Length: 248
Image 1 (cartoon, helix red, strand yellow):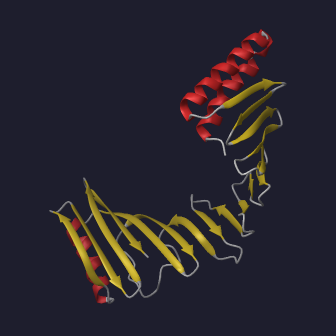
Image 2 (cartoon, helix red, strand yellow):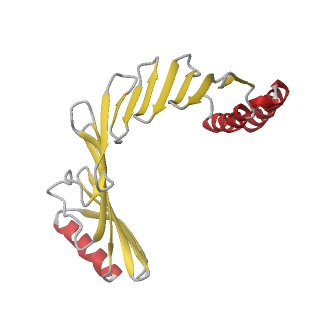
Image 3 (cartoon, helix red, strand yellow):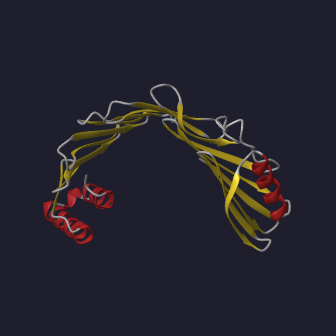
């Protein structure tokens, strides 16, 4: 598909051209030439730009895109480098994206969405009132989630970080594989907080693989137990410290 920077440049300058179309075709043609030269200089591609009838059309070896906008919203139609037609329709009710290769994306005005990849797998997502976000696969199981607190998918046989405030968690899953990253802040002594948690990991059967320390300012260790791996890091930031625990 055409480079995003190229499209953005064409659309930005094109909007000006449309707004000043009353000045005549001579100015419009000059603007087209200026945009073409700018895109070709930036991307190294040969492109053709056409502003007419309230539309902007960008053509190149990597595909083509036509952009229109009015009081009802924005419509983008094009063909990517593989010859697949696609369309984007955005208005006050949300965003719809469809492609000839079977991929699609439907975003409602409340932020929920449904997406289909080229293999026909369907994903859905929604945001919560606290700024968190969850994406589910076609089986209804979460494949990505970010939220306040430690994700509910945290394994019960792995000690959870304790004594932290402003905790956020991010969860990723691909088949049977999962990854969880938890961050939080502590006002306690950096090394004491770090050692307390890593001692709990060792009590749970994790073996230390490596450790890095920088005085009382920072520390990082990696642990392994079977196929489970953990990385624990803490960094001083003035009166508090940020701790990051990654599980995979």
